[in-house]
Image 1 (tube, one colour):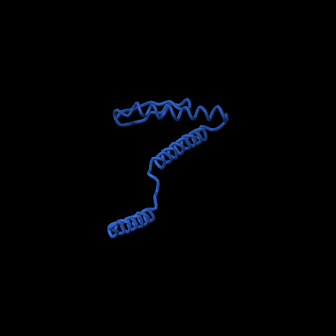
Image 2 (cartoon, rainbow, N blue to C red):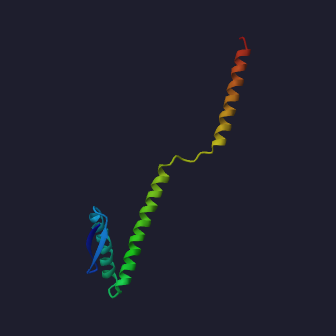
Length: 110
């Protein structure tokens, strides 16, 4: 088990993670630290807990936007919904008309 020291809002935190996950943990902690810094600049005087709360809300908002974008792309890539029953009826009607025309042509010797 690896130990990683991260720095957020001027405080150092020692965390344990699986071996090899250290770079990912550093990346995630930088994302949190960036949001906390934005909150501190935008709303000076907040307690540390409130800074972390607002940083978490900003990250959740980003995540929600990303999930919505993925859903929009999945819906755009999906084939359009077609009323299959109407299509089947139209094709059956067309087949009956073609069959009637074929029979009429076969019955007419001229």
